[in-house]
Image (tube, rainbow, N blue to C red; front, side, top):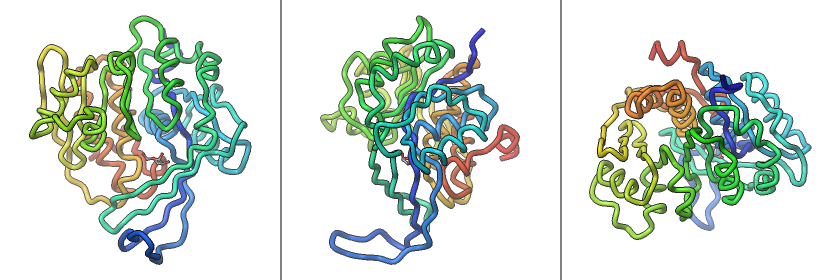
Length: 301
Ligand code: RIB
């Protein structure tokens, strides 16, 4: 038996959010809403999203010894996430500057802070936690070498799920460990690198699969997702229609839900269908972690 259903390795940020009518162009100033400060960061978001759905979850991360770090630890703890592998110090807590427009779309600039100091040594210090779940997920707001080290530490048979966000070229060792690699269109283009993705999401998924991952999920926002597996199966998964208020963190909720359900033994298309509903629920409320649904809310959607 495992101690956790899901272990997440990744970032924790304080999200400084301003609503704007439109984003400023270079050299331009626009006025926005009052500032809201929310707990965020792709890693912490995934951990909170999974825990809110009922998964036993732990996070491997680093925050600063400052009020933003305490905001993150409070949010994680109240969601029920095990924070025993969240280290503190070396730099201020990561910060994300976020603008949200009236359609709910966001633009984000991240100052990694302590996330950038989450080292391969920190991953080794968390080895027991990393080997205590059937599924481990990660993103790329922490150093690539730390993600790679975490993968090397996994017990045989542990499933590794990666959302390469923000995207960068990935070494073969990491690509080949992904089951699945989860990307949106922008991330797919960066990972593929040479603009040869093909014409539609099914083609993108096939092209990415050819790079080495064991499986691929292409997320399409309100359009749902496409899954592709090594046996050749490519499946279009629908989403549900909702009124979007704030899309921040919806992709993290999708990834967390997918990873958790895979660990429960669901097939990739079935898990992606559930994850699409979780992502849809998350865009109906403001903020990232504050917007995540319970399993009951997903069932009612
Ligand atoms: O994916 C959304 C997240 O990206 C935000 O919470 C922000 O912190 C950035 O990491």
